[in-house]
Length: 313
Image (cartoon, rainbow, N blue to C red; front, side, top):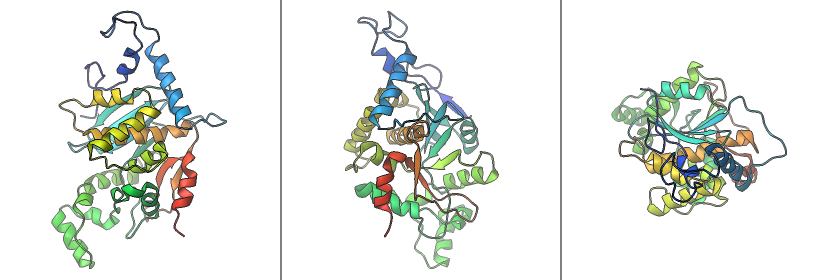
């Protein structure tokens, strides 16, 4: 059904940062739309974006002109489709659901940049971006698992994939990897079809994004209570009201889990670097696969020193 939205007050399908500006209402004005505001929603959201730029160290001596007023961070949903966190240049943030790769592509068309947690650019062997990402995330290196070879996308069942692996003298495909092969295929089809301008939809890894935003390696897995709390705290430091936005997104019928929204939010904050300090990649000069797709992971340019330390000798 395409893109769904719900605002934080429970309105029609969209999740917004209403919780941020509600906090600055005069005492006794608890209900939305009741009592005076000390600031408008836009004022508070713009202040929040200013905090992102200062706290994340994103301010540069120049203001980059982007061809759109918003960026996207994208992660897959276990319930199907994709969770999309949208950050606007004026400081608004929303959470949306794209039900298919086609709907996602249409959503990406108008964005300055969309970063997605899915392998883009495939080769029959290790990718350098994966190797360098593992070095950067340190304790969380196991979360960066190998991308599949392109020929694996031709398999439609895990049994077929296992046979293809065995025919090449390899072990069975990792089930965690197989679970996202269909998503990889869908995004690969979108990119190879030319439906999007080159460079509009690019790969990132949420653990790399969080590592850069945190300024240090993360100790806890996102699948633990401590890990979720840690990632929430990192986002909250970089974006005022991030926790409210995540809470508003977690409805009973939401097709995602909390860690999916957190990952997409980290990707969106990284994509916002297109307006500020700029972006860099792992590796610095990404190779391309046989179809011309870059094998890279995008991260904030402020992490250049990390990239240098992760490069293999």
